Image (cartoon, rainbow, N blue to C red; front, side):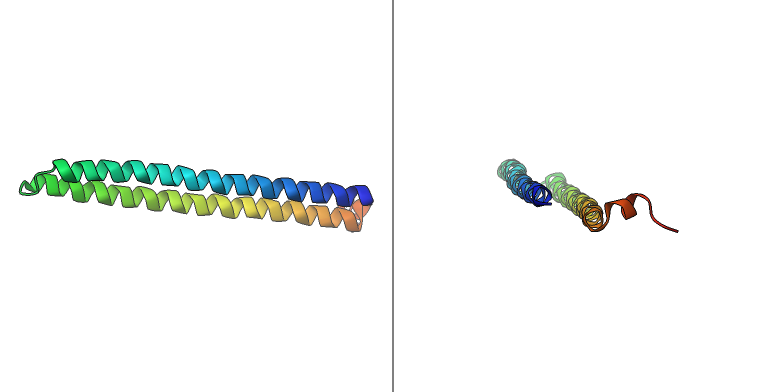
Length: 110
């Protein structure tokens, strides 16, 4: 039983390190993408002739497309996070049931 507890602690530590690394990578990826988008919008703003209605329309359309894409990416991220949490909860539930009675979990009595 001591070996099982140690294995659970190692697994929990590994999962927490993976989660921290994933959050850090996600933060930097989002920051880099938004920095590039910001630079492109500043360049467009400096080069655009706002007396021309087409340039104004292009600016508005590009901002709307960026907002839609960002909203879709955030919704997808939340969906994936929710599904990962569901899978991790299922793994923990199976683990706790196997600790209670491993034979009963595999071969339930009717």
